[in-house]
Image 1: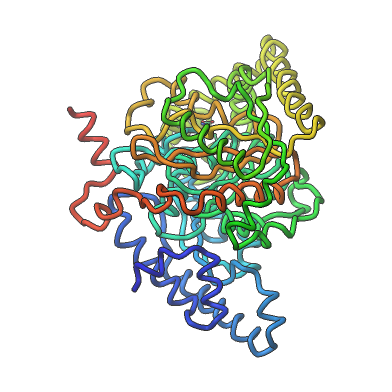
Image 2 (image 1 turned 30 degrees about the vertical axis):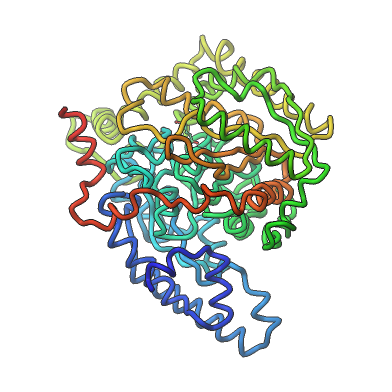
Length: 528
Ligand code: GLN
């Protein structure tokens, strides 16, 4: 039975909780048991906190019982996330717990307070199971840059889950948990969602407060949800959204009720597409895109048309400059944000050198991994006196041009844009580690959305060579309600597609305790 329960979506679990046929304690215990039993070969989790999770589950059950005593209205007023287990990327602060951001330099650090998203999840009554693996400081597209070893993809344990939020994505795809939190600076929610065959959304910049999140590139970072379907991801976004005084970039924009009111009925959901104008940006079919990925995305476009949408090819002419712009702006901001890791204030600290500077250099030299050092060097260089105008200012101007490309399409009346999420399916461990630019290209189709501050969602749209492909939908700023309706519409229109019944191929292998860990696979691979 345990297995059946972990296969349910969050909204299905919520319905059973309310009907009184299940408790949050049962739901939480089942997910903890599954995560403990099957994470060996996956390594999605850095911590699992059974005791705290079960206490939160009991508190949720008590809230539900109290609401029942008050009548149906009180039960209906409870948030759909009440009593539902969730995974947090290990850069979200939970008071008293670790927040390593995948880095050795934060080992030993304990968060003194809850992040805004943690508070919001507690208010909703969600149950935090633990913290998930990630690329160090969210720099990467494969989770191979974690200081704690890589995470595998439940579809093929020889392959990466994508990154940087690969742990949360893999945990959701492997049925350890129905919901997960990630962050997306240039694709780190959408790309792993695509590679793991789940739903992942990057909200509008300013939708979710970044208070209590370990910062990477502050003008690009956004927190967002993972779920196995659109309704679950939307409900999670609803729980964490909204203005927070402690993050001045969080916007006082109302949270759309649509996020917790998406149609349950597939046909009704699909009917939303009738008469909608959908743009297909030609620049997103980038050179080197796998033909199977392109084929699935074009089939998805045909589904939208059949459901009544008007799809037109459009152009976002500055797309090509996105990667260069991102790799100036993001490292520049990262070099400033990471200056605080000095061996005095946070976590890891090497002492005993001749002077403070020696200790500082040793702490950062040993505490940061290679990719982080590369970013700090790139960023410091781009911000240095003689190069600031040539690189940083130029990149900011290009950023405006990229944003205007999108603005023109919204002004022309497009409801949404559709594009591939990732140019490839999940790649094997090691395939992009030797060539940083190859790794950076993983985000070619997602990063313009961050540069322009827009919302984007990735939904599964079939398989190529047996591995999941993601369809990306992009909306105007603050249009998450409509964007989720569009994504739910595509989901509804393809509800009976044969590929939807195919589960991740390596779920059975994860149940076998002799399955090697991802780190063992990588070590074996590099030895041959
Ligand atoms: N691949 C991007 C990078 O390495 C991922 C950033 C992100 O979205 N966190 O910068």
